[in-house]
Structures are given as C-alpha cells and as structure tokens.
Length: 245
Image 1 (cartoon, rainbow, N blue to C red):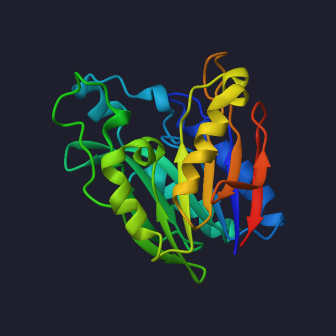
Image 2 (cartoon, helix red, strand yellow):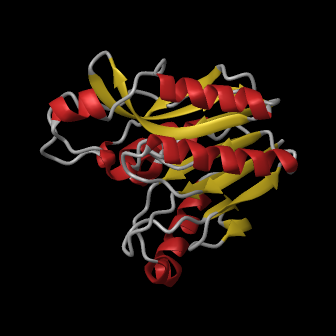
C-alpha cells in the first residue's frame, strides 16, 4: 500500500480553492500509484475558518457529510481512483465537530472520525462545539489503520486507548495543523513529535497543512516508526510524500 501525505495550501473560507488544491495533488499522486492521499486537519474549510460564534459557524462554516462540497471530494476520489482523507468542520445534528473523513476510491466512506481531544476548541466555546467519543480501526487496501488528529496524541489521558490500538493496526494516521515557523519546527518541535512516535510500535504517518501567514503552519510530512524517521518532506513548500509499507 502506498500512502501519500499532502502538505498542501489550505485557505480559510475558500472551499473551492482548497478543493482545487486537493485535485492537483490527487492527479500527481495518481501518477505515483498511490492508494490513499491524506490532507491535514480542518483542511477543507481552513483551520482558522471557525469563529466560535455558533450561529455563524453552524450556518456558514460547518458542513454535513452529504454537503455538495464533500460530494465533490467524493467525486474526485472516484475520478482518480484514490482514497482521500481530509479534515473538516462538521455539522452533525447541529453539533460542530473537528472531523477527519476518509473516502475510498469509489467515494464511499471508509471512516469518519470525530476528534476526541479538546484542543481544536477554545475554552470559552459553548457546548455545541463537541468532541467524539472513540477511536476507530478501519480496513483500507488490505491494511488496518487508525486515525488520531493533532492533539489527540499529546493528551496523556488518551494514551491508553491509543496504545491499545497498536496491536490491532498496521499504521497510525496523524493529520495535524501545527502553526510553527520553520525555524521553531526545525529547532526542536519536530524532534518532540518524532520522540512522541516512539510510544507506538507501528508506523505513524504525519502530515501538516501549509498556510500563507508568516506564523502559520508550514507543511511538512513524515513517516516515523519507533522514533526512526523513515521518510520526510521538509516544511516550507507545497508537495506530497509517498511511502509504501
């Protein structure tokens, strides 16, 4: 199985531009025989699209899984014959979730994971900004995989359920949105994330968004296993990293 990690430009509140970015990556990844292409956390609407004004966010930002925009991503998966994973802000029965959706090569849902850690939300957010309840193991292209989004893997109280999955899966997928400058990332933060991966025996596929702001996320993608760096796409430019396992 070949997974491609897409460190791609994600713009706030510009879904059409973000979908075009996805298609550009999918076309290139198809040429490299990828099976699954993964984008970062909240990629579809842009990480900063959420305002925490509930009435605004539920009407103008959050999307249902059957929305036209997500239907378009499903169509792209079918067009290129690739699985696609991406983060988005979800409207689920009027609750807002930081969700990660993976669709298969025909556009069907492989897994829908709602982030279980609170880090996507500010402390003042009302109760309608919700969290999921569990991690999921799912099958894709003959492999068993699990998703953990950004801060999930930094919450010590979640380590037990994550580690319990280690014997059940072939790999972990770790899409994030990390607003580090290149200097800060390469100066120490990257090393902390790599060390965190040592907790797990199975490979960890890490991908970050790319942003335009000087202090915004700068992309980067990595495959780590027990602390060893197996492959890397350095931050600072748009692209993708393909890895076969």
